[in-house]
Length: 497
Image (cartoon, rainbow, N blue to C red; front, side):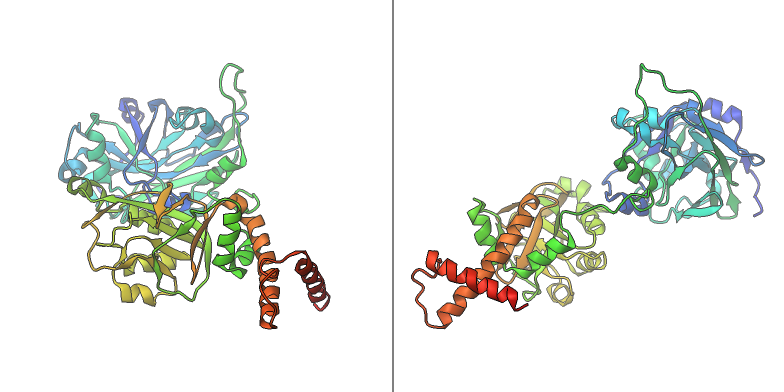
C-alpha cells in the first residue's frame, strides 16, 4: 500500500507528551454480542502513560506477561491522537481535534481483574501494555466511519471489523469526554475492540493494523515474553478462574472449558413441554406459589407450547425530556432484542398499558432471527398481522398502531420486572400454552416437572375410570383403595413397554 503525504512515524517524543490514555469499554456491536451486554452510553477507563510502548516498522516490540499470570489478553484497537485542546466541543466540531489515527494493542492480564474493582489499573496498566504505531494516519485525510481494524495472532487473522456501525462513533467519544475533562494535545483515546480478542502466550506474536482510504498504520507487531520477577507478598497476586478464562478467550469453547450447563437442560425442557400449564399450576400451588401466572394476554400462536429462560425489558411511563435521552438510538428496547439468545424468551413490563405498541414487526423478526423462543409483553403490539405471521409466538395485551414514545420509554434490561401481574427475574423458566403463561423458579423446576408427570399419569388413570362409569367419590382425589388400584395399573403399564 502506498502511503500518502503527511504520514509520520510514531515517535518517542510524541509518547512523552501524552498525559492521558483513555480507553472505551465496549464499542463494536460484534464485541457487545460476544459479551452479551450492550451499553446505552460509552464508559471509559484510564491507562497510565507509562503503559505506552513505541511501535516499530522494523522489529516487533516486546511485552512481558507478568510472572505467575496466565491470561495476557490482546485487543486490537484504533487509537485517536488529539492534536488540539478540546473542552466542551460539539459533535460537529469533535473530529477537528483529532490529528492522527493509528493502531494500538490494549493489552491486559485478566489474572488481576479481581483486584481492580473496575479500575483496570493493575490489569491494564502494566509497562508496555499499550503499544501504538508504527505509523500515524492524518485524521483530516480519512472518514472516521470508514476505517478498518485487523488483528493477526501468530499469522492468523482473528479480528476484522470496520467503524461503519459503531455503538458510539468517534466524534461522540471526543465530544462526550470533553464535557468533563480537557483533552490535551497528545492525549490518546483507545476506541474499543471488535470480537475476536483473545489470549497471547510467551513466544506468540500479535499484529494490529488500521487502514483508511489509501493510508495504513502499518502492522503494529508485539511479541510476548515470559516475565521472571515474581509478585511480592504485600500486594495482590495473580489469580485466574474459569470465569476469567472465558472472558479472556471470548468463549468457553475457545478457552478449552466444558460447555456451560444451563439449568434448563434439554431433558428438563422436554419434561416441561410434556405437561400442561394447568398441571404445573397445581403443583406450584402445592408449594405455596400462587402468584406466578402472567395474566390477561393473548397469543399469536395459541397452539404452540413454549418453554424458555426469561430475559427482561422494562418500560417506564413516557416523560418527554427523558424520552429524548433514552428513547432514540440503540435504546434499551433495541439492546434487549439484539442480545436475546437462542431459546430465550423476552418478557416486557409495560404496566398493562394498552395504548401503544411495545414491539413491532421488524424487532419481532430480529428476535426470531436470533432464535428467541417467544416475546411476552403486557402492552400492545404494532404491525399485528406481520407479527402474527412469524413462526415465533408473541404474547400481548392487544394490537395498537401507536409508535414508541406515546406512553412508554424503554428504560432498562435484565432486571426484575412485573408482567401481567407476575414478578419475573432474568433466568426464570417460562412455560406457556393455550391455558396460560407460568413463571417457574429454576430451583424448583426439576422436582416440579417430575411431580407433574406423575400427576398426569394419575389423571389419565382417573379419566379412564370415570369414562368407564365410576363415580368421582373417592376416585378424584384417590383414596387408599383407588391408590392401590392405580399402583397396580401403573406397574402393568410399565411391564407392557
